[in-house]
Length: 241
Image (cartoon, rainbow, N blue to C red):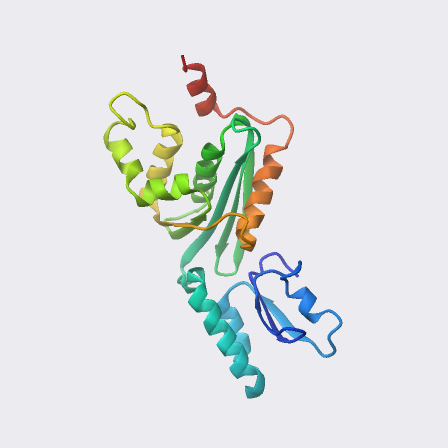
C-alpha cells in the first residue's frame, strides 16, 4: 500500500469498516488477510472513498456510507476543504537540549510530501517550531493551511494570543524576561501573514498515522551524523550568564 493513503475501507473482511492505518493490530491488513473474497481499498481522502463507495452494489454501499459518515463526524480533518493544505508537524531533541530534528507531512488533494531536518544542539520546542516553519516555507504560493501539532507550546501560544503579545512587546515575555525562541517565532508569524493558517492540537502517540510518521522523521533526523548548528539556539545559549 502506498504511504499517501490515509484511509482504508474494508467492505468484506473479518471486521468491515474504515481504518486509519494498514499495518498493525488496528490496521486494515489484519482484517483482510486470510479472508476469502475480501474487498478493500485505500484512499488519500474520505472524498475519494465516498466516490468509490458510490459504485458498489446497494447491499454493500449503504453500510459503507454509514461508516464514512461516522468517520467524518469524529474527524474534523476530513471536513477540510479540498483547496486546503493539511500539515502534520513534530519536533524532537535527544537530551533537550541536544541533537534535534523535525518532521513534516504535507497533504494537498492527491499530493503528499515529507520534510525533515536536524541540528547538532537544540531543544524540543525549537524543533516543534521549526517543523511548522519548514512546512510553510515549502509552499510555493499563499494557501489555506491547517497545521496539526502535538505541541501545546506551539498551539497554545498562537490560539491564546501569547505570541502576539510577545511580538507587541518587542519579543519580551515580561518587562525583564525575553520570550524564548523569538527568532523562530518571528519567522513563523511572518509566514502566517502570507498564508491563512489554523493551528490544531492533536494528542501525541495516539495512533494518528501522519502524526506518528512526523515523529519518526524527527527522531531519525536528530540521529543523523554531522548535523549543522542551530545558530539561533547556540547564540542565545552563549549569551546566558
